[in-house]
Image (tube, rainbow, N blue to C red; front, side, top):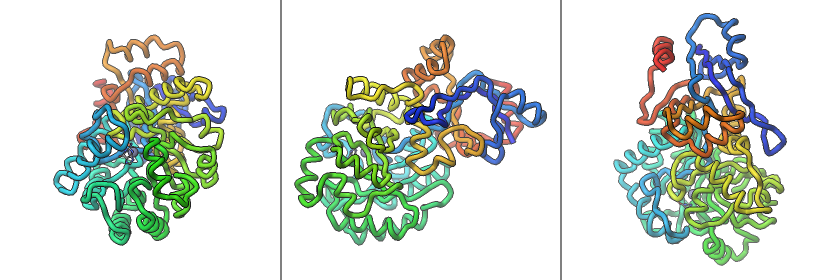
Length: 447
Ligand code: GUN
Ligand code: ZN
């Protein structure tokens, strides 16, 4: 049992549905076995639990662990390859690197770098695009399990339009996915996601094999890309002449449902939004990637008006880093740039999009996403270095909303001082600090 004392910001009430930011200046969170058993004013909780360790975090801000709903494991080393549109970027930057993961030793190192990148950014839950190579995906699952991250991922499958080493057959796609799911689906905090790369590179046979895995692995997730770039959309329309639209290429194979997350959807028609909403699927909005590849400005207002659930994804390596604070800020920018067609976003919207909304689209709303009683203690403490713009801004913030705006404008990995997942403290490097009461009190005293 540990009692955390902190200034807490979270969004249990959806700001897109009239909710607002919850701010608790001097909260006590009593964490037992990784779960928040009680939350309230610190003094009143301490009065009821006068003994036991207290971790005093009042020199920072405690937020829920961040949730990234679209990020590519094999692309950590190619972040920052700027200047190309999607299909050229794939051919010249992403796919050559993804071919290197055929070497499982290489993949193991990349998995470690990738997991480190997530933790350093304060991401505690992620839907991860895996590799085309089953041993590489196995390495990823091993690494995330070692560190304790909540990760849903799977084998990426394709049978055309990519370099030969990345191609598979429907039978092999099924067999390898099924074997990986048997090892990792709903084991600890990992789950399996059926993952055709995109309809551009996946013919009918591969999509049918994906549907078969979804059917045979109860509770499996589905993720892919959709409507990211006009040249991609046009080619998918040519390849699937019978489909009503790009979303229809997945829907007609039975791949869309409440456990489906489609990335991008920048160039969506109303008919497609209606299909996505109708089957309760979700969209991962990846604003930094959309800007970096020049894909376009995400029509968030139309998604929300159609009732489509939206969360945020970093889309590393087209996205320019792991930080969900950056994604929140970029989402805000994109809506501003859309003018009247945009959806004005407040800091509370940004926090919701990067925490509770992500948890909801990943079916984890009862588990993580905010710091309410009954939730897992997945949390991050921001503690900017003295004298930085964020430190100065937070000390002069006029309100909790104002402080949160400064966080999204200014916070980066260096400001993420502590990360907890299920009550266990994790740090980048995959190294877990000891969690005994003694070490906690020492940590509290030395802050
Ligand atoms: N579409 C197909 N593959 C990819 C990828 O790796 N990144 C992005 N942004 N879009 C894709
Ligand atoms: Zn992507």
